[in-house]
Length: 135
Image (cartoon, rainbow, N blue to C red; front, side):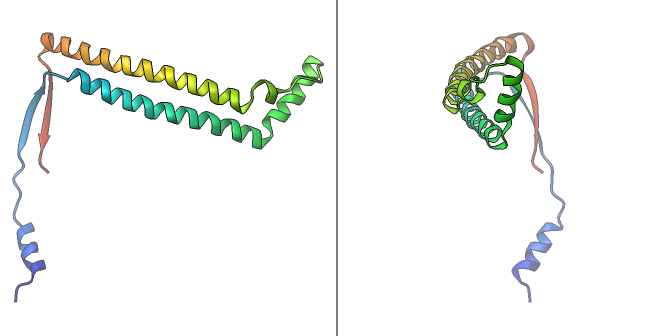
């Protein structure tokens, strides 16, 4: 009486042959690199905006801004000064969005430049040798 499990067990006892393939990476597509670097930069931009808003909310909830107000009022002698009016949530979010947009532009440009530099350097070095196995 042979079941499917017994057949699979007999198959798994055979030694597997490991094949190795060595390839050279001699060209990186420019537009693929630009698209990928743009998507990664957008993801990092979203993370930047969300993280900065969360940090501001945590500092506000923990009362750090109120303590900082008290310290600065004592040092400056000005009772009208407030950190939360100077650095509000809207200002922090707007600054984070501006930084995220700049990071998107710069990250995309760096991805394009990296692609071009790699394609030019392949002419001198011959490319990157990569090995693969089927384990």
